[in-house]
Image 1 (cartoon, rainbow, N blue to C red):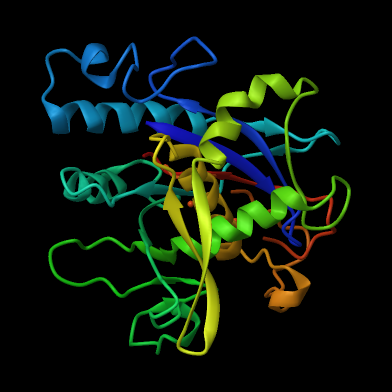
Image 2 (tube, rainbow, N blue to C red):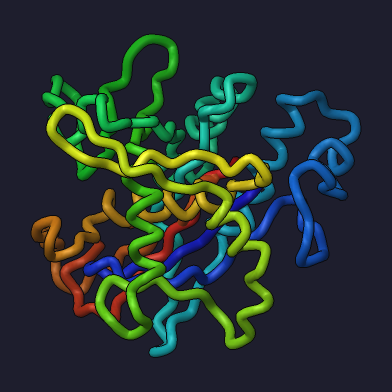
Length: 281
C-alpha cells in the first residue's frame, strides 16, 4: 500500500512531509512488482481480504495516531484520510474498514473518476438530497448496502492541480515542496509523479487535461496519492484565490490533512498548515 502525507495552508501552499509504502521496503528504489516484504508475507495465515484489512489497520494506526510538530512547536494530527476504493476486489472491504475503524471520523473511501473533455464537469453536477458538492469532488448521499459516506473526485483535474503546484517557485503562494535538503532521495517519488503524461483535449466547449500512463511506466501510485491529498485540502476548505474564497472557520481552529491512499482548512494565517494522509493504492 502506497501512501502520502501532505501539509496544506489555506491558500494551498503545501509540503509533502512523508510518503512510503506498507510494509516498509527498507530501500529507496523498488516497484510494486518486486515489493519485498509484501502484505501476504506479513500476514501469511490471512487470505486476501484479511491481509488487506490488517494492513490498513496497521498503516492507519501508525499515521493517524502520530503527532506532527510544526516549526513553531505546535503539534498537529491528520484530519482527513482517503483510501482508494477503486480496485474491485477490495472495494467492499475498504468500505467495511472505513465504517469499523477507530478513525471512522477521519478515513473515507474514495473513487477517482476519469472526467474527460466530453464528460459533464463535476462543477456542473446538480446537488441531490444528502449530497455534498465540492470543487471537482463530491460526497454522494448514503444508499444501499454501503452505508458509508465516500468521496468521488475528478482525477484528471486534481493530477493537473498538483503538477501546477509543483511548478510554482518555492516561497510563492500555492507552491508544493518536498521535505529535506537532498533532492536525490526523492528520485522514486519523481518517477511516480511523472509516470503519466497529459493530453490537452477539447469537447463540450472546454479544454481539459486527460492523463494517461506512459507505456514504459507501471507505478503511478504516489501521483494518485498526492492528488487525493489535494482533494483532502479542498474538503477542509483550502482554496486558491483564482478558484474562489474559502469558507471561513472559527478563529483559532487548526485543520490538518493526507494522500490515498490511499485524500484538507482554516481561517488562520497562511503559515498554519494542515496535514493530509492519503489513500492506499
